[in-house]
Image (tube, rainbow, N blue to C red):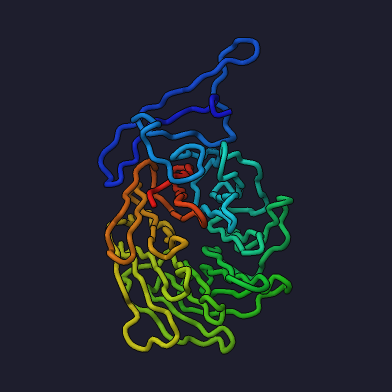
Length: 363
């Protein structure tokens, strides 16, 4: 099948140097001798312009970089499941697509049911997939049957963000333009707790033990709520524009926030910290007048972070040194999300250009 793929020859320069691309159609012959060109339901191999035999591979991807196409509108979220075998993507085309991470990156499932753009996705550790949509609902999906198990109804505005707890029975947190974040127990019809704000909520996160939740929005401030008491424990001021993404570190000690002020901030959210919680500020990526919800992520070992950016580059930083490790080209529009594979040095990115990339990085 790989011989029937269109190849995009590209060099993803680690330092972000200018790179020229050229399209090459790789052909093979069918049983009748006719020329056969690429199909459309798998990933396209993306190789460097140098000899592939000289490239040191670091993952089990079919090629160092894979381009996945199939969505007909902007892609807002791309998440790899916990065992690292399945990628889920969602789009303004109202669809959620399921892809193999390895091999030809086959698109083997399409989840339909939302009536408007699907804006965010999150995998629960039990294998279920959660979604948030502009149709004012969230949903839980079973990827093995490609069916929707339940809907989360109750918001009266666009649902911008969704996340899940890290252990135990599935709990879901959604954030909406109706100025509320809702906590859901998937076993119950209605939300368990509503966290109310004076402003639209664009990003949400659980604490490691799920006793606290974090919300952020257009008021530039992150709030930490006690779930049981439904009260604000503390706030994290510092951003000077809308916070578009939140991500908790693998050890649960730090919270990453991406803001429209072109800053990626790292906060110490351990319960015993009383004084200064802002740890580091990372810069280089950018937001623009489109005001997209650009998200951020931690690597599984907590040593690297990544963020979406409007300048069409994927940014990856080293947490300890604050050095920018990668500035990767390839996208032709704002990058809405960048994420890490749970087991291998692979990053996934998606954007307004309708494209999704899977690429390996150095250890």
